[in-house]
Image (tube, rainbow over all chains, first blue to last red; front, side, top):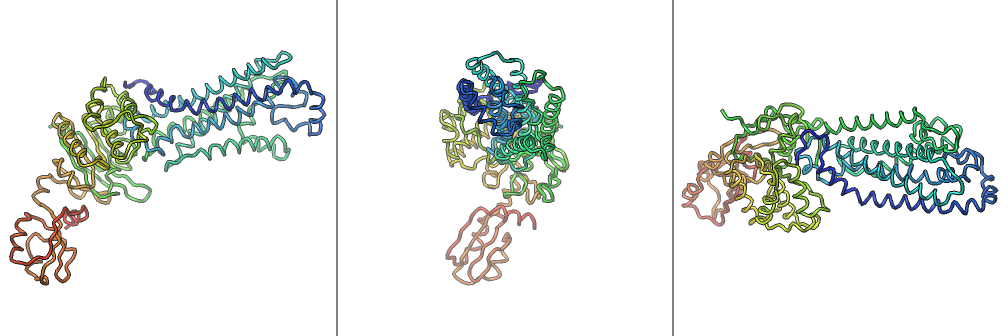
Length: 276
Length: 295
């Protein structure tokens, strides 16, 4: 079926979604397992609070600040424990998933030499780009939504007191924005590659480097400004702050940067020479 | 006057400083089977990739059925089939699933019947995964996918690579049948003999430039052959001066190798008084044909 007026191609969308289902499932199982596994330790952590507190006091007070833990007491609330221990799975592994997906979804057609078959169909470059970008967004959304649900269920199972569900959702929303940013960063990078080859390692390297920069900036005063290079700086994980809310500037940062990458990738891909 | 199906005007493409094609001009008519021949790296694939909007020209323009290949590529591709020279289909799909996937891009309706007909014709097992198919069977998949939507124009880039002689024959018969039904065919190859079998006109491209556009009948009249003769005695000037002997490649002692232009029977008659030890007559290579045209 031809879709002359549609911005996306349903045939390609369905096929791409099927192709990416396996890797989405593997990443989902991996991250959900880590989330559930980590939360299973929370009851033991609470039971042995005094011993853990003694152990934690051996560290500098701001050692876990990069995880949104401004004091050690935060770790004993269920949301603080979740933010300190589980957020990393989605912010790091989720971002790696997103950048790997984004960097391969268009480029694989070139390095697998299938681009000739795809782009000789009645399909504009815009159709191909928008369809593939949509598949990427849908996959990232599914990953985030399911992990949010699994995290929520895990918290409900182990909690000993109430927690702010709104704060949990805000933290998860930041994570989604971060994942989308890395997804489009991967897509953008892939459009810059002239002679097609997989750039998975480069993508993973970028995520790890950004996380490293952010971590260094949080634990070393001299490197504080370096943190502004990393998007992790703009994920507010301080969920136990009574005034915790979505920072509109941070949201604007993510939305603006993601839009810039998406638009730049779109225009580059429309003019890109495709070699198979 | 009827509009050409493909019209290429001063088409130029540079890769950095190196030339891909330069000032290519072609006009291919409705219902024609047009051969596009040249050695590897001559610019055949560059021209085809521009026609399909896979790469962009640095100069000139190209139209298919009156539509600009860049601005109206979607409409063009709905009417065009393409067999790439060296492309892979999705390895995890079965041949059948891939062909159905390809056909769903088009507005031409149910293509299942066409897929069935062609898979029977080419004896292709559609249940096998593409990853498990031989090179020849992958080429069959490429051929079938190009025809599932009954295109008006078929662009072929080295389409017979990997096909065995029987399948090549079936493929050529199919092309003749489709052409008889009105399909225009743009056939790119470096094998002159297969182009000669099928095409009405040919363009010869070398180093990015079209050096000759010739009607196939004119080419046939030239009847170029590569000849090697070993005589019992040393060569004499009367042999070398025989009319039609061109591009002498070897002329030592009693051996002579050359390109002969003309009726080969005339040559045999002229050599009838000479004692030969050995003689071979074969198709000249493209390079040898180019040398002929460069003269």
